[in-house]
Image 1 (cartoon, rainbow, N blue to C red):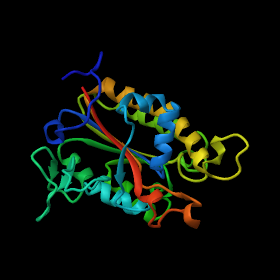
Image 2: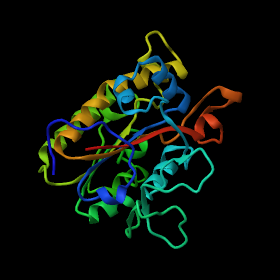
Image 3: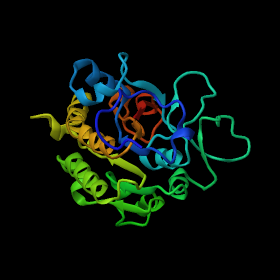
Image 4: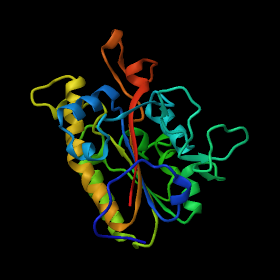
Length: 277
């Protein structure tokens, strides 16, 4: 297995089943990121590391299976990633086997466990969660549910939505933990990035309210650290990566604010999956 040195250009994952056991897995949720914001940053060139991995057309438009963090992640961890915004059915990368599924193909990595996290663990992966928003804060029983899928999970106050350097701290910890694991140990790393969630006005000087433009600025900040994490993971093993939003949020469109509501700015999310070899 190649574990260091130059890598080929990343490409879309066409066969996840083939790579389970040989590739590390990185799953990043850019919590609350709107599709239009992701495309705006791509068009402006303010997210250069993400742009390296995206096609010339930019982010893929998909529909989230949930309109707020808890619901979306429960679906993700069951193998239901955001769905392409075109008529289906659409094959899935990862799936938990169940009778009647119409989206499992020979290229799908299928698990018999009740969720894909425990499925990867059963394939000898070390499963690691770096939490962000409040649903990953284990101070409450509810906040213990999503991290509870993982063999190892971390959440700190400095990773929370109110901390301007949350992504730096999350990436620093992830890289440190990766360095402590044997290189031959396959890893499933999940990171919930909190910086896009409200309040994000702190990323735009003089802004006092959240808006499309403040989320644009927050994504540029996230981009400045996300590349370090991908670089670290590429260094240790071939890599499958999924980077997407769990849901968007409304900034006054049609009178709506926030999420946990059914509006296109909430359902429409950016998505990319990649294999680095």
